[in-house]
Length: 290
Picture 1 (cartoon, rainbow, N blue to C red):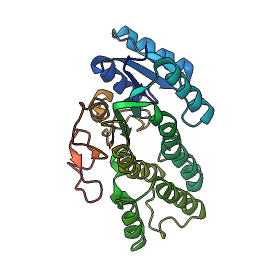
Picture 2 (picture 1 turned 30 degrees about the vertical axis):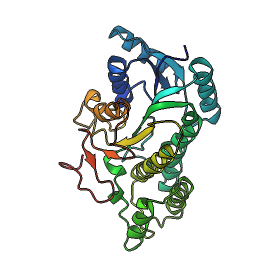
Picture 3 (picture 1 turned 135 degrees about the vertical axis):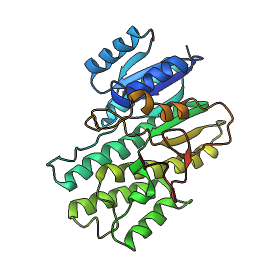
Picture 4 (picture 1 turned 90 degrees about the vertical axis):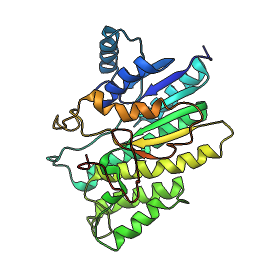
């Protein structure tokens, strides 16, 4: 069993995550794990994939619960001895009409989209085998230019986020600074953007090159992590306003998950929905920015 290749997709029971499952089940040479926090929904999605002729495995995983993360990591380690692909798709987004205070939205969105994703990375990265691929589902609003509050504070924040020496700890501190500013009500004056989802994804995009630098220094060969904008997709998260299908939304994340061995690029990069690399710091964003 230990020699079998293993891929894991988080938040995979619906939306883009389900689309990624279809892609990986069709193209990945190994076992694909559908993970979801709700066991009933996860198993229902697994059954849907079975109807399509695929044979994914299911395991419950709530990235917002450290005990759930630890249990899953232990399961993968004991069952397979390692991991070859991780797609970090699980995330939350408040609707535009949400009535929760901005500070509360910031706390929950950053906790799940940034810190919970990071916690899962901490648990699973030690299990990555040589040539493993990590694919972060970011967003068009995870572009650095979305840090667009008052100047010159916003420019100072963008400079910090884009520093080639930014550490994981410093990136986390920046995320916590945003949450505090959101709670205090002075986020715009301090340079931050006015979307908690965008700021959480800026953090994830900034984390990507930090993680790649760590991979480059790792003794395991050819570990690669990238983030991507999947496109504006017709999902529950977008209130079904996105024009793209979940299959179209799965293109970029799946492309990053299936990058061939020993590539020189993309590594630590920010990829557009059509797999085009985008300069995360300067842009421009392709097309209409979606």
